[in-house]
Image (cartoon, rainbow, N blue to C red; front, side):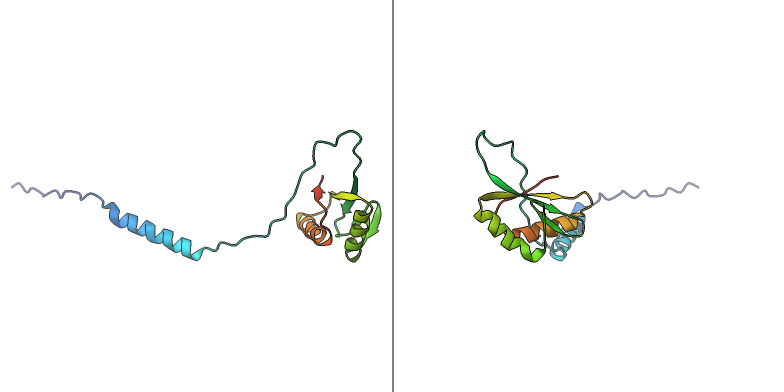
Amino acid sequence: MRIETVRRRRRPLSLTSLIDVIFLLLLFFMLTSTFSRYAEIPVSGGRAGMAAGAEAMGIIVQLDAAGGWTLNGQTVGDAELAPEFARLAGLGATGAVLLPRSAVSTQTLVDGLETLRRATALPITLAR
């Protein structure tokens, strides 16, 4: 006695339902994700150099790991930054160079840049 089993033909996989699921997942992730704008601090690098004979006064600002400030060799506090920058700008300062000490963390550096932005409108260049 011979019994033949009927082979079932495999149905081709329908991509329509797969595309629907992927579309629903995409829609879900787009609606649940948040798009937030982070505050940006413009940072400029140093320039190549100045022309011979051009004299421009700059302010050397040093930042230590504790958040302390030194302007042109003088230690100043946060409250004294704005008046000191105004005084130096009145004397002809055209910009400031921020020199963070080696132990300064990135967060302290960013906080320091924000403090300098509030204290003065002079361009600030970050140096290593």
